[in-house]
Length: 372
Ligand code: GTQ
Ligand code: FE2
Image (cartoon, rainbow, N blue to C red; front, side, top):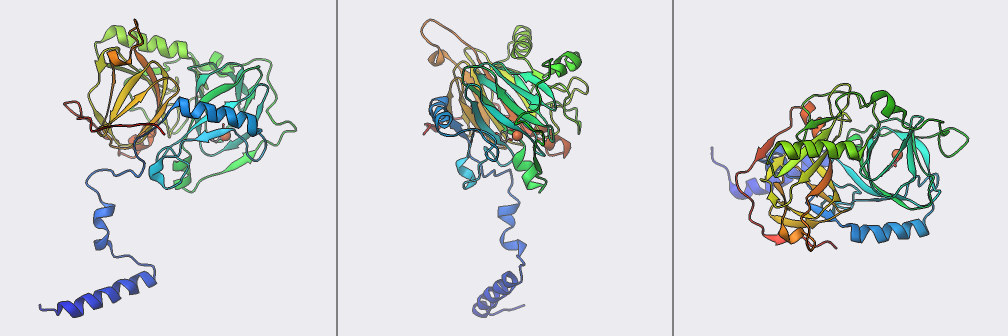
């Protein structure tokens, strides 16, 4: 077959514009953008330091009351790769929330599920469907999809915690619902007994070794609070049992052994002092929240240095390794580091999309991330 190239070009251009005019797209011109050999998340590896966030959160406490409508005093992690979307990564919301003395964040419920990891302060309880859960540093609190929740600071100090939500996933599925609590007060009535879920459900297996449970459940955990002391006991047990540079436990639903939420997995890991983990790639995004210690992570060749209260994002299929070495130790000390992490792994598992690859050697470090 012979064609006149000049005529073909003009004809093709006209053809493409005719397609576009009736809302059709030719796949062959976009195949390589759509079907990439490996995931190309728009979110970039990024870090938000406590040094940057905390003064701004304190200014928010001074300037902005917590009220109906605004609902929460929350600074969301806005990944610079996502063109202004207020998301930490394509599938995950991450944020720093704070409450001043005696403040109440009003009760509401929504289809996105949330997890809270407490960073600093005392005195707040989050009431989850009538169960008041006392929050202390290092605790994980769940407010699953469509559970009523409010946060009450009954104390005289400020409190700061990390929020992780599956909001971007629920939004991508066009399934967002939101309701304000209909009661007369801003918050749910405070029950006489706090932490009921802990008394009733803390009996089963609440942690599993490694990063992601392969038990899947469409249900969320009925246990709403996981205490830091229990998490640390698990990390201590693993530290004693192996020489691995990185010890990791996933929080699990004590009834099923599944991840705490159908959409999100929560885990805590310890990086041993003077240890360096091998780089790993996983499908799915994760947000990491440093609880204690200092260390570094290399994400796709860029080094991120971190300390308590810092938050960083590892986008899907980025290679990540962690280390804690002499340069991280304060004078005369030798401290391991502990990090909380939330990911979308249960969704990837449920859909048969979960993949993991451990690389055999550390990545060459090409640059050092400097927080803005
Ligand atoms: O505390 O209920 O970071 O509804 C985003 C949405 C926190 C909350 C967030 C929320 C909340
Ligand atoms: Fe909420």
